[in-house]
Amino acid sequence: MHNFSGTYQSFIDPEIQQVCHFLSPAFEPDAMHSFLADNHPEKIYNILLRHRLYPSFYRKWTDVCDKAALSQEWVQFTQQLRRKADTNRMQMLQKTNTLLGIADAFAHASIPMIPLKGPVLAYQLFGDVGMKASLDLDILIPQSHFDHAWETLETLGYRTEFNYKLSPRQRNYLLNNFHHLAFINGNIRIELHWEINTNRYMTGRPNEEYFREAITINIAGKTIQTLHPDHLTEYLSIHGSYHAWNRLDWLYDFSHAMATHHESLPRLSDHMQRAGLGMIFNQSMILSNILFSANLKDITPTVPNSLICIPLAEMGKSYSEAKHRGLSRITQKLYLLKLKKNWKYRIHVFSVLGTNQGNWQRLKLPDRFFFLYFLLRPVLYLIQTLPKPQSPKN
Image 1 (cartoon, one colour):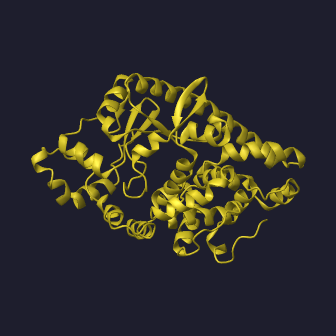
Image 2 (cartoon, helix red, strand yellow):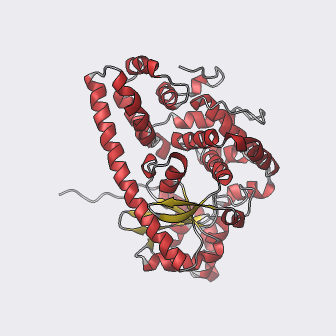
Image 3 (cartoon, rainbow, N blue to C red):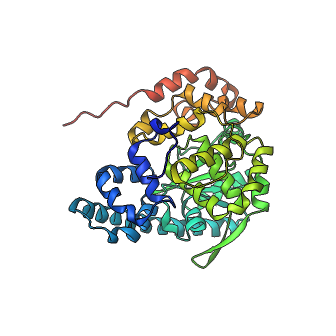
């Protein structure tokens, strides 16, 4: 196995190390025997599910597993992994078809859109829409098209996740303090973004630049806009870092994007430094080096240990631990404050503790009393966290 830095060794789950080593360029087919001997199939499978790495893992697994004698347990693992990958491929093809339908509707309505993550990212990075696993479809639009995009999605049968109309005050607060609104239609969930990140001061670019420099790719005979490769790598870095790299597939995507466009590293690093995002970019590269042997040059070595240790610890948590016992709100805010030294960004870190759509659904107030949502926030939060009463069993 490749050498993990001793400084961070205690923060890295052993099975996580094994999975990352298998997916890294450093893994040699001759190491397959030791991989099989050192790991338990069920633990590896659970990690692949938790971090949504099973499409990429399965592709590499099929290349090397035939070269080693598999025990019955590993044969069953291979069959289970194949079923999961095949099912995901079908789901991603359906999501691709849905996305292309929305793209047609938006084009007809003259609404610019750029898909984020999901099948388009899989195609852009790996040339195959089935190489990513996603639960929803993320679409970026200019904020000025928000109302028109909402109306267009409604004509396609989508309704907002909370299924109610926003008042003027709620709409303005949503657009100024959040970055997306979720829409549901059957088992399809759309996240309509008007900002790249929850914190609008995180990025160093105006949204218009993403659309002005967008490129087009062809999927299933249709042309669709997507992020410029430089912007894509920047977005992957920002998105993963903001969420403390809670999922390994985000880091794997970043590592792959950097390996594919390694020549853009100096240009990206220069932009990220000037935009105050040097800490985020360097964190992304260091984690890629540690976990995936990405061999990326550390442009700015001054990264606090906590910005490396916290993500490594988060990655090792099970799905239930990550969902229910992830970073505490205080720890999360302190972590986010270290990512960027910008006073507007830091103020916004705490502004998301204000009111939200869940509050508006639970308590309907006229706009003239909108200020009460902030005063009642502790009570509404307590109600939100209380366990729901269970229906009596017959």
